Image (cartoon, rainbow, N blue to C red; front, top):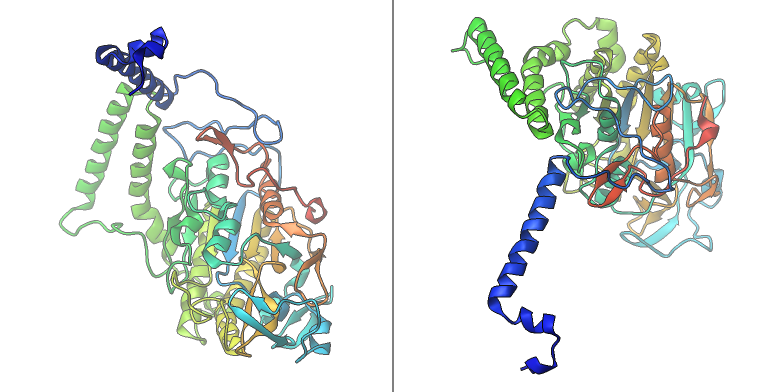
Amino acid sequence: MTNPEKLSRHGRSMLDRRNFLGTAGLSTMGIALTSLLHQDGLMGAETTAAAGGVDPIRPAIDTSQPYAARSSHFEVPAKQVLVIYCPGAVSHVDTFDYKPALSKFHGKKPPGLPAVTFEGPSGNIAKPFWQFRPRGESGKMVSDLLPHLGAQVDDFCFFHALSTDTSAHPQGENFMNTGFTMEGFPSFGSWVTYALGTENQDLPAFVAINDPRGLARSGKNNFGNGFLPAAYQGTDFTASKPPNNLSRPESLSPETDRRTVNLLAQLNAAHLQKYPGDANLAGRIASYELAGKMQTSVPDVMDLSGETASTLQAYGVEGGSELRGKYARNCLLARRLLEKGVRVVQLFNGSDPSGGNGITNWDSHSNIADTHAMQAEIMDQPTAALIADLKERGMLENTLVVWATEFGRMPFLQANGSGRDHNPGAFTCFLAGAGVKAGVSYGESDEFGFKAAVDRTTVYDFNATLLHLMGLDHERLTFYHNGLERRLTNVHGHVIKDVLA
């Protein structure tokens, strides 16, 4: 045991149980008081410098109206955004990134390419499984796998030198959609609605339309709010599966329902007056009120009976596989939501939290000729029709369209000889619509499509550019969380100005 005579006077006093408990109690009270003051927003001003030394721009949010429309950081044409996300990793070398060297070296294993990749030993170089042809006035080479999207290349801006930090699907989806490979961070759609709110107060600001087969690998994290207020998470439903509990019970008359809602609004307003600074309470009330409005607004927007026969035919609702018909209806729902003023719509083509190997998504480790063809039959025509419909209605002038996947696929086959492995070194996404140059390509992968070679673009750069196109400074759109000014692009990212119209 330590000799008390060798301790300082203060040290000896700590050996006294009564003094120790008294000091500990006072310290704990101070910590608790600080925590309570912070929760109520009564602490002094916090550090305002975000990464890079710039001051953050915090949206001016009325807690009683968290969805109200807010101004962007600077004026841009884009007022809404449609994200078409294809989980599983679409093969860029079989779709949009034409590499003649693959045909030249078909069946060979040239030096410099790895012998082992994500799922094991690699095979030989494989030429594209579909013929590439020049499309549109620009002559952009696109494969026969996606003829409908290929016909629209003059409206698209391709990113051919994208690269990512991971070759695993859950982390890849997280990275593309939240800016981090880990879970728990806000999605792109949540950042946009946190900053801008929405024009339509009867529908959610951010709607995620899942694939007819279910959620993607990272599930609701792809459209979650992370540490942002819960009001900014995506609300997920599909054309065949509306949000739960929308229908009024048959035992409740419309008049009784209306009177109940009105009474509840009065009670909530009176309760809120007692706690004017309680942001959580105001947010909960706003969420409940929005849910009430959705009982009438969602059935209306989901009612496709007013769509013309020619529109249904263009989208491919009938005449293809059952899954294509369901996905086509989801595309129609996406257009109708955008028409109603919903700020962010995220449309998924591909699903399955447990994998899928090309059956429920684009993850074609084997039989890529069959599995990619199956996914393309579902995705190509409805997606192309959606973009064409937005253009015909004049909506592309104010809508940014994003087509994305989490990474690419290898230029060589796996050892099984029929599939392509994950490729984080190079992949392709494209943009269209408001503020984007049309009929251009930015960046190049190497001659095999293996690595980004010219104007390499990181996911941080891609997301920084998306925020910029929505009128938001990616370095200044932050949220103070756990002692850090968090942002979608972490401490990285540069806006790719060459793609801005």
